[in-house]
Image (cartoon, rainbow, N blue to C red):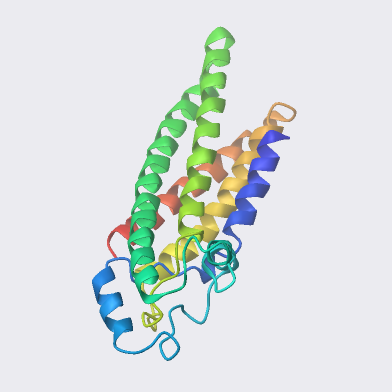
Length: 220
């Protein structure tokens, strides 16, 4: 049941992933401030027209941080938010590598587990479950950092045609489905050992697509 709940949580936090834009990370906060200073706040939009609901809940015109006055919607405030965005998206990338390393370790443990017996099987099984929990948490945190980062620059739109960021998002759909399938199948293996090959296939698919997504965003 725990694995199923984790899988549902991952599904919820990644549903809007295709709408997420991570462009503008390397643009300096000073350039944003200078651009916005050229005109008044009323004449210059401070936020993009399209913001996903996870961002809008915190950073939208009526978001939590706006109504509590913790992050007033001003040109100066937006310049500071750009620095926060950069930090969050860099952390998103770092956690992506941590998650990838965990997947590699999990794959090694899984291959040993398939042939283990007796006490060794019990030890490896416990370690395997612990690593799975760790991966689920880092995977979820990686997604949350991206989905709740302050919005991009209003002037940095989407690129037309193919881009590495679009590939990153497309692969995210694949490894999300793989994560859900892997968790669900792992929960049911003890009841039906015939599901082991499917669990392994789902795990390998998740790893391959996640690794490709990490590489795609790294070379952007």
